[in-house]
Image (cartoon, rainbow, N blue to C red; front, side):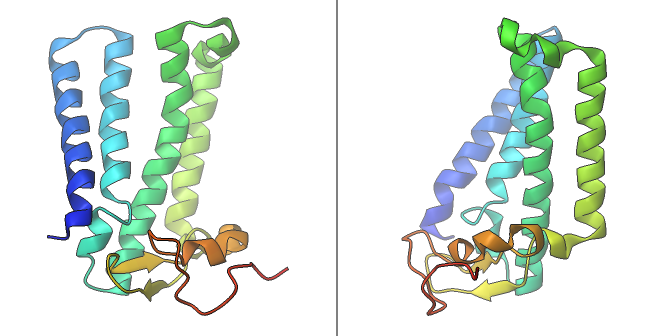
Length: 169
């Protein structure tokens, strides 16, 4: 096991253990939302470049893990605002407690997940081999093209493609 992944595995385990505890022992809307949010957060963490990506044996596996990570990120975007609105009950967030707004966020999430599944190339590019500590990194493509050069940097900020790190204008 790569030592870089230990913190990722621990963070995921803690998130999922707390989620199980909350869902089993706490009651109410806020607890349910927190439990679900922690499950999704753990999934997002474990599918990062320091999680399952280190175990990817091929560019295709890295691409699949990256797609799963994109789906978890999108799901987090949909879940956070309604959770915070319910938990904090702050005036600025109350709009996200409205059923129509929650349903709209859910619909946006479903459309986004369908888009990720239908056109994965719009969200990620081809896997690129890089030196340790990362085994694979996935170059952003499609809608994320302007971040392409940054996506090729390893955890130390080194660019292994030989370009300047500036996206083509």
